[in-house]
Amino acid sequence: MTNLPCGVLNVRKLPITVQAVEWTGGNLAQVQEFTGADKFLSMSDDDHRRAQGFTALVFDHLHQEWIPLRDRDLVMRGVDGEHYPCERGVFDRTYQVDGVAA
Image 1 (cartoon, helix red, strand yellow):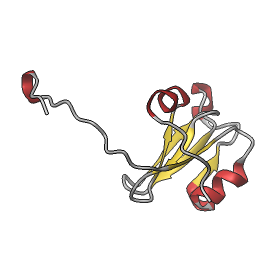
Image 2 (cartoon, helix red, strand yellow):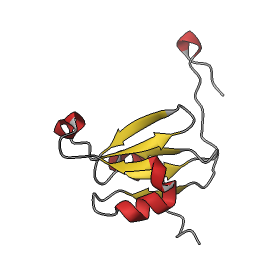
Image 3 (cartoon, rainbow, N blue to C red):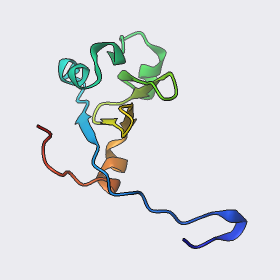
Image 4 (cartoon, one colour):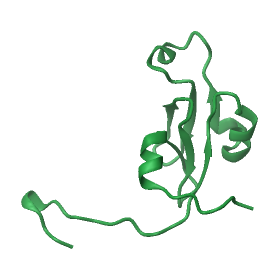
């Protein structure tokens, strides 16, 4: 690793496989099966976050908080079993699909 000014390091993520499912806005049952029904909620039409384009919430147990996501975001399952959203553009730039999980 190369030390950069101010102690900033260049780092590379380890090549690990994680699972993901896309939230389409219409596949609530599929995403809840992936996360657990109590860990993923579709937002009601009167939720104030809808004005920002958010349509659902996923619970991140590592940080003990609900995180909003938009249609087309992916719900990721990390190495510790946690779930978190990943914007479609970020996903496309940083992940490679490695087949369908059994």
